[in-house]
Amino acid sequence: MRRDRRPYFIRRLQDRYVRFYTDRFLLPAFDEVGPGLEVTSPRDIEVFGGNVSIGKHAHIHAARGNMIRFSTWDNGERQGRITLGDYVLVSPGCHIISSVSISIGSNAMLASGCYISDSDWHDTYDRTRELNKFAPVVIGENAWLGVRTIVGKGVTIGENSIIGAGSVVTRSIPPNCIAAGNPARVVRELDPARPMRKREELFLEPERMAREMDNLMRFILRENTVLGWLRSVFAPTKLD
Image 1: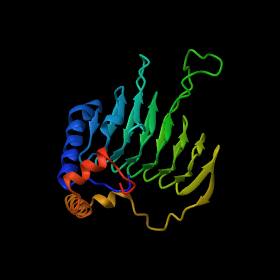
Image 2 (image 1 turned 30 degrees about the horizontal axis):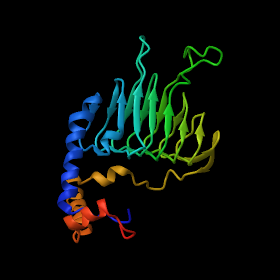
Image 3 (image 1 turned 60 degrees about the horizontal axis):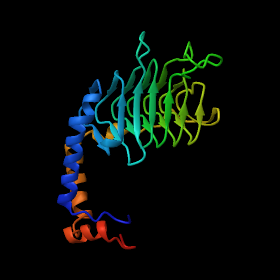
Image 4 (image 1 turned 45 degrees about the vertical axis):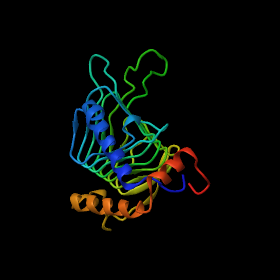
């Protein structure tokens, strides 16, 4: 698709359906959800198990064929826990799986395809049990995980730190740095004295932002017609 051919009112109807589906079928799967949650493709978001909570103004963006999964395991003695702070961004294809505790700080960003697990799920020699192969994971405030980052058990990633795309994080990463590789190592220090703009600044005036986004959508879709949209759906050309 080269451009969005939908008329504005069709786009609004689809947005309302997404909101209905999210409220009716997705939100009850979470223990707690703050206000302002924005969801894309809610049918492609899977929540399995309890103890999953999300703060305010989180963005959970799944895509068809690229599901987001939040999963906690109950072994009869304890149940895993997943906690996302405020203003968190989770991109398509991310899987977050907990046996004990995974905490993701406010303003953190997870790029597409990230995998976070606080357990190895099987012992080295006893493949039938987890035994003690688990430890909490903490993703610090304003951390940024690049595309297809893997984070293993017992890892803490410090605030503001960036993990390069494709990295495998097996040991903790300090705050205010860039780390990359397999296993991930610090490759650069950030200046902690330099001002850092965070995602929360996008929501200082949420109502104003919503109006501006709606006006932008009206402008982008202003020339679209129902007939043109139907033609693009059933008889697309190279221009669609």
